[in-house]
Image (cartoon, rainbow, N blue to C red; front, side, top):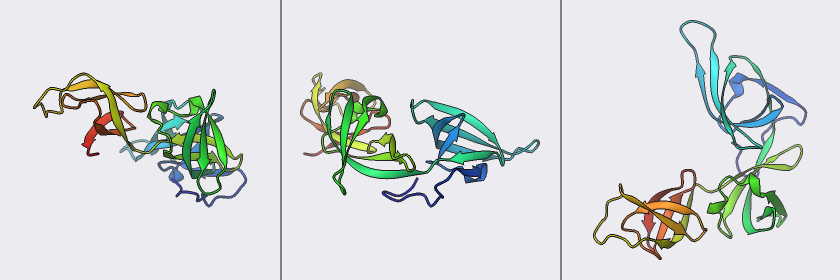
Length: 203
């Protein structure tokens, strides 16, 4: 994954490479669609040719697929930029984000944000752009958010166990599972990748 505001050092024309270049975060064109590699494993079996087992996310739909490439298979790399933006507000069919360096605003279609119920006003996100076409591809939320519990059933006094969970609604409108001892008004930390409660946060 390129560092923030740093382009991959690749030429502007069509970029062909081999499976030796596969790494997490790499964006490739496969079967005329854009995919981002999220997991990979080079395999050298005792018998038969080597291959690369991958798990890839289709950029347009977010669908994750498993795909196996034979070792040395030609792949087309797509140049991407990772830029930091701040979430401002929601419009009818899009979310509006602002680049904190240039103050440029960009409208992202609603369907492009995988877990919009975790968006918070002022939140800093990473947006992957197609470096050649200047089009947004993926919106990456921060790994964790801090939010207040706006409603949950009454807690159980003295119960500090975290293995028993109940439903709770947080300030963003999302519903998450929290331990029984969590009460209304408390602030909690949530893992946006899984939607799982992490810990209680002191105000």
